[in-house]
Amino acid sequence: MNHIQSDKSVFDEIVEFNADREPDLVKRKMARLDEGVFPFFRGTDHLFGRAWPSLQPEDPGPAILCCGDLHAENFGSYETEDGDFRFDINDFDEALVAPCSFDLVRCTASVLLAGEEWKLSPLQATGIALAFLDQYRAAVIESVATGRIGEIAPRNGDGPVWDLLNKTASATQAGLLDRHTTRKRNGSRQIIRDRNKHPEVSRKQARQVGEAVEAFGETTKKAGAFRVLDVTGRIAGIGALGLRRFTVLVEGGGSPDRNRLLDVKEARASSVREYVECPQPESFATEAHRVIDAQRRLQARPTIGLAPLEFGRRCYRMREMVPEENRSSLDRLQKKPRKLRRATEVVGQLVGWSQLRGTDADGRQALAQWVKGPGIDAVLAAAVRFADQTQHDYNEFHEAYDA
Image (cartoon, rainbow, N blue to C red; front, top):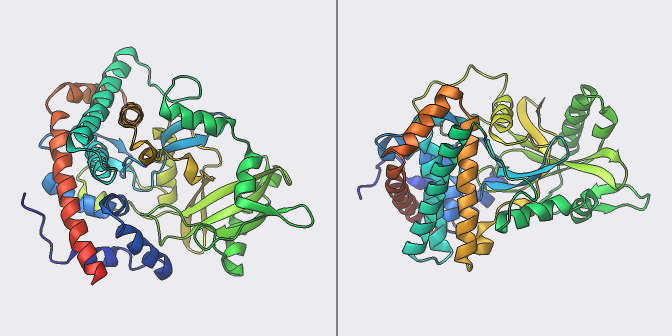
């Protein structure tokens, strides 16, 4: 395969992309990218965007609202605004209007790349990728025919995805607090400081975050629930490393056992927007509003605590904290190919349902027609091309990073 050529090395492109982020966290990000081709793929969505015009399928499908950074680990369980629980797509930082195959190719390529790291045979990885696409196709066709879009809720199914979801639904908020906070002598809680998860922040940053969260609370009918008790930084994921991110402990339903933890994450413009030739919605007030609008539209039920914040001349997406252990973590199933395949099939259904939510009635009909034609069959071939390009980019990066 002829690989995409650039005036800059892959290493230099990554350095340039991260140049205006926090230097210490960028160092951490570079180390994470060097761990393997799948972490590299997860953390370099901008390189996927760069390659899209050259490697996309010939018929990329109708334009719809997409996640923009779909991969095998971008799924998880969370609490909804109405106090229920769902399993769905988890992160929407890169959301944009794009051809439907944008998310499909990226997610399929991630399955192929993850399969290599999980020591699956090429036949096993390809079979699981095809199962993902088959279930996506079936979910779109059935939903358009019946007029009903599905969702993954507790107790409405069985298998590895429901095992994770039901575990999340049965967990108590106090249990979450006990894992991430400690009680002081006066009985109140504070976030456990951890340089790898919840590092200390400056007094100025803590004050800015606290004031913004409490100001938001004043706009609700539950201002007391947003009284800030503690603020730390938050380190999670790969692609977002280097952006400003905070964990915020708030009063919630009452101290100490009904406190809540919030995740406040800086929002930037979608890193893939410049590579996609689709008209975008009218501009949002901030990039945080774009991310939140996409999350509200694409998820089955909105995440609890979802709101935009602005402070220090930057915008942020706030939501209830989703612990890392609530993510899909399909790698835990790598030695159980049947369960892995089943989980990936469920993910295919989720993507189909999400994409149907991301368009109107005419768009849904167009999507149903596209999945019945040869367009979706070309997704796997495109994913193979992207996986090959990613392996090439990773090898170049790894050589430069270790030099």
